[in-house]
Length: 437
Image (tube, rainbow, N blue to C red; front, side, top):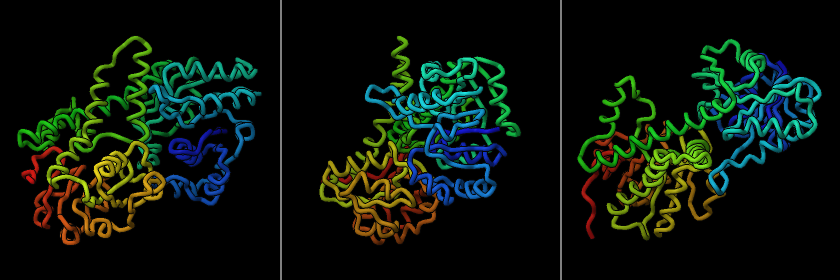
């Protein structure tokens, strides 16, 4: 099929290259010509494992191309995906200006039957909004089907998820449109769930909000474990053995961040309020998440006898491993807190340093973990990159002024850390006695 994808971000580009690899003729559209030049050279503008390999492959086949204008890119397309940003607005609702802008331009180009697919995360009723917007541009109503097809890609494993989805959700008004979109994914070994447009839109928000709530629940349990000298990992394992609960998303840590969970939880709370329902369980989940970093950092602050004048080193800046995305990353919250308390901050990340440098000019960014820890009073593990698990803890501790390790992701073995000379504190376990002044 001939496919156009509007947007080349964390959703649009993986979607486009994978569909091209499945044999479809794909055009990805973006106004940023510098970004398109990088893509043409086989360079991904985002860090996503496996993406560049597939990009190189499809560029050679000729099935994958880019265009800088929607008018040119959608010519002849049977299916057009809208995969643009929907950032959180000041009132909690998603900002749909990019979606509306794309729909307006698409509407001016419709000369033959086309399926327009909302791939971006959009609120309930967005399918109706996109359809109205397209028709207001003079498009023939008989030519246009607007379908909801939410993405469930995880940053850091988007390529793997694209080839091996848990399910494909399609919300459509007409059976024929749903069937044609389903045919685009032919060969993928997963359920295809077809429903109405509004239900499809709710599924995306409800899914992410449920997972976020599951994380907040285990983080609340971790707070209790710290008080009663239990270990949250053992609790989570015992819970997860129940098939009704499952093990996924039961790992205590610093809380959820990134581009999806914070935005989607806030959006669902706001949309529920619009409908006259107080989604109190989600508000509580968000509150637990907001408190988690402050609570964990208070443990470190008490152990150090205050943060003013201290040097604190961070390992990890991205909101999760295997991505360069720092949107709503816990590192940002930690850095702001440390700077407010008068600490000096040093930080390392395998791929996200350049993004963080633009936000924090007063932070020293290092390209080596051992250099980052050298001379520091405390070391905080923020993002559980695999390479951090292989670090020589004894070497890390020996270079520090005070060998205090605050493990926000429970990455390190407590015995190994203590044997290396660290005073070790981690989420969900009782820590060492607090320092008294």
